[in-house]
Length: 309
Figure (cartoon, rainbow, N blue to C red):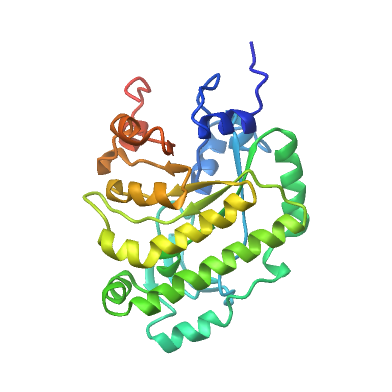
């Protein structure tokens, strides 16, 4: 018998640490994967969310500096583009993998000041017509509606090469903090505009990878000094609107979970198994303070046999 609990209510029960009728279902699928699924039988005109019964719907907004997008080179296999962040990226034509970043727009603090002047909230950053239409459909289906945004270190990596950014975290902390706070203000301002314009959000999905397979990208000390206050303010803002806060952070980020809890993060995702993020262990240690999403080994998902999953 089909459950009468709406996805929105099911997810809220779990975030409040209550037992629901079942575990909610959600995944984020690359366009290249969807194209392959179409060739394998996914009906035309049916989204993976509808086909598989996903229960979360995320709405994002343009928080880039909105530089002109240009195709710089393409052949039968590759495409090289400059995106709205000013990055020059090389990718396969079907965008089936993480791109190679060839060049970054911010090499000096003067470059950052020019970028910063473009990071101002306005209504043109939102696709109001199609966005509101899609929101109304998803809301009527009972899905858990989320505002999605890349923040913090992940956003800074759009502007500055990783090796340069990591040096700046140690040697130029004021600059890095300015990048974090400037972006956070834009993210919050745009959420307010969307709410005033008719969107109703159950939560915020923030994306900020902070680890790799063996540990953190930088020390807990530098996280605490620079990014921890930003995350606190983001959580305070979203909670004031009655929104739960999810954090997507890849890699081995165990050391930061106490900070996430203090900030007010309600759910941590994706719990990379290959980076030592053991869902059962994390649940036993922190399960009464934070919810977890994911914990499925992606290496097993590549196998033909679903039973190991």
